[in-house]
Image (cartoon, rainbow, N blue to C red; front, side):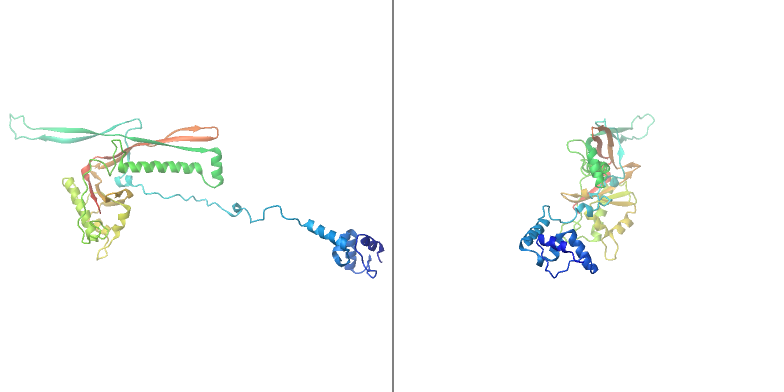
Length: 374
């Protein structure tokens, strides 16, 4: 059945169908669906039949189409925020620093005194005296002890660790235990300072280290090398030449100790990290310098430290670990790490930590032989 009313309504709005066009309620399913759509919205009929639309209506429809798609007012999208495609690895990578080997070279450290002490005296005793020919009525001959007290001054230092409540929360959100890392940083910094004092003491105080104690015997020079391009250093030296330098150093130690040291004694050979590679140099028979040293000095340890690269050249020390049960040198401290009171603020915390060191107490300087310029 034809729908003349729909034709009339569409014509009133500017959509003119020819008289031959059939607009009906019935027909094919497609025709019925189209009729239903047009009855609900005349603009759909205009869009489906643009060739039947008047010029005025077409201009109006073009305006509607332009209004339907306005220009963007927001920033063009460049992707998702980077944080949604990021992760934080749970394992913290800590920066590598120089090795701290003073205590290892000297066989351990010990506490002497407390943080209130200002001077430490280390006693020495030298046996003196003479004997006389025996006679029933002779009173000649006597022994004595010459005693001295060597003073040392301590150096005390301090550092604070501070952290806030919000600061901890933010670092925690980033996967870092900030307070724990602060404690690690403090412990390492104190160890670093202590290690440096054990090697070089503290300027301005009677506080010396393993490398600058004024009582140390003067360093000897290496032997002349076959290849003199680099002087007497080990740069172009053969394995036997390097061994001869160490043998010469041991001979110097024997002289200093008055013969009170043997090749089987427990000793420590201290060299720089850059010279440790020389220990694996091989001779013509494929034997390393380290193996030759082990054969000649079975109880000798080899320990490295960067402090043995000095301004005057590469330094090497041969240290007799102990004599008659008494250690040759002792790194000593007053306080290793003294934690003071925690100060609580409204939303933060602070704590001071302090420590002190006597430097390295060299009891027998003659038990340390040195060679400079290897």
